[in-house]
Length: 285
Image (cartoon, rainbow, N blue to C red; front, top):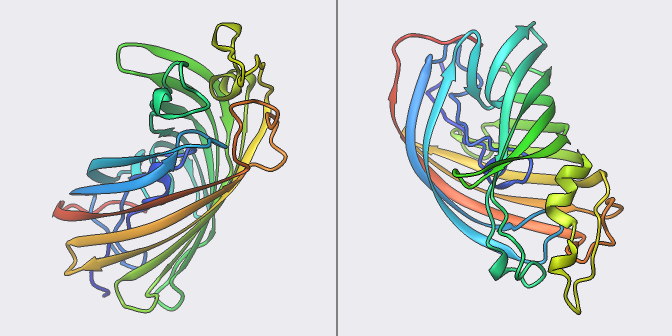
């Protein structure tokens, strides 16, 4: 039996398409706890929005919880979700995602415009487990295809921001260089409705300046991203991680927007989690 290992999928916490700040026990264990709890902190430099010209450094405390129930899940396969149907190779869920807020006064292109609030996304997700790991071959490949409604919020106000379609391919490989080290790679592409694009790229007449003309955003393609990360577990309790997230917005629907500044964005993140508690009861795969 392999020792307990945990892998934090940090890359999704800071990306604009997911909020998968979830952790998991080793992919190769025969049995996994029903739930696991941890505390940690993660920091990173993140673009304010896709194709933004400014990035914000966020430091976020992360109370992290994993739950492996038959119907309710919070794990590396797709973050927090409700599992409706499952076979050995695929499942159909209701899942959550999101992105972090940004202060417009710190962004030259958006100065004088409303801040961007925290974004919460919810909707159905199809997950295909293309490659499942074994003790002989510690590789895992998953395709996640969510269609979600996006909602922006500052807690006091909640506003619907349209739909996002965001297929994500995730590869994981344990035992890289060291027994307790895990390599993580992902690729995703994102499409959004006109309401979502309006939120990021439209410029209303009351926000027009000499360098920021009026603009009405169009629905369609937003960008494609690749993420790479490493995670290391020390003494089965302390998880250290770092990663990079590179996005390309070449050919995006709103390249003509004055708020569309960079065709390439880079995000960096690093942090740690202390895993301090797990259940005796076992979970389900």
